[in-house]
Amino acid sequence: VYLVSELLRQKGSSVHTIAPEATALEAASLMNQHRIGSLMVVAGGRPTGIVTERDMLTRVVAAKRDPATTPVQEIMTGRILTCTPQTSLDEVRKAMREHRIRHIPVIDQGKLAGMISIGDVNSADHQTLVETISYLEAYITH
Ligand SMILES: NC(=O)c1ccc[n+]([C@@H]2O[C@H](COP(=O)([O-])OP(=O)(O)OC[C@H]3O[C@@H](n4cnc5c(N)ncnc54)[C@H](O)[C@@H]3O)[C@@H](O)[C@H]2O)c1
Image (cartoon, rainbow, N blue to C red):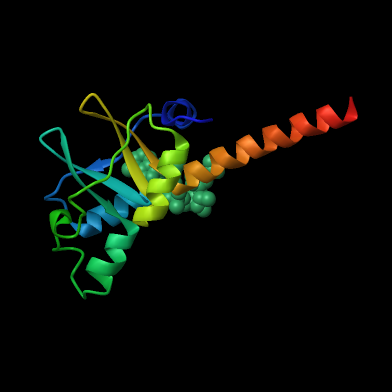
């Protein structure tokens, strides 16, 4: 797996979203329900930000804000780093490392086309390593 498009073919391209007016509590419930660590914030069909577990920790819990009354738009990250289906996993990994982020939304021709997490990248790397090892073993034994 070398490209984001290949990873999405395995993982799927659906993205869990939430509205900016929704509360932090609703965001937390959605993340728990789907067992995910991020939600794309979408307004009028357009991505306007991302809200993650980290935002919950730093901007709600540690900031002593009430999750039931704090809107998502006040805790989300508005300037998002995105990639496209043609982006290589090497670039995604580098971007995650350099910007210390764990989720990168995929945009294809202006539209939301998927979500890649650090776990997805690790899992793809693992798969590649296993394939390389079995190839090398076959090479040695023949
Ligand atoms: N294939 C795998 O085995 C695999 C893949 C990813 C994560 N994980 C494990 O899950 C745990 C947490 O993973 P993480 O830190 O990568 O973050 P995470 O909990 O946000 O990601 C878990 C999965 O949910 C997906 N996801 C997250 N937000 C999404 C959204 N808004 N819309 C659609 N999909 C979304 C991710 O792409 C990933 O596949 C880790 O223990 C990790 O190892 C396993």
